[in-house]
Length: 117
Image (cartoon, rainbow, N blue to C red; front, side, top):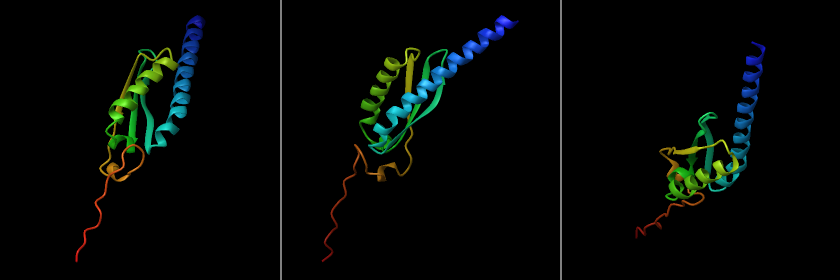
């Protein structure tokens, strides 16, 4: 019984370390995304299967290139930095007013005021 407890305890430490490393990496990447008005957060992580689900929101959700460039970058960076990560899914959450943010890669064009006279 004691050997089983040691294995469980050891496994728990490895899982916790993996999640801590993932949190640290997300904290490192977040300011780059925030600089363009976006927000990156962890939705789920399975340390046994290596599957990670991230949420991309804010201005990034309204930006046309976030679906490709940012997603592809995250799908490349996480497995290259964390050997246990096998799959990265990036879910974009778009709020109804995200297009109004106008920061970063997506800046809405406004029409000049019309001359009423």
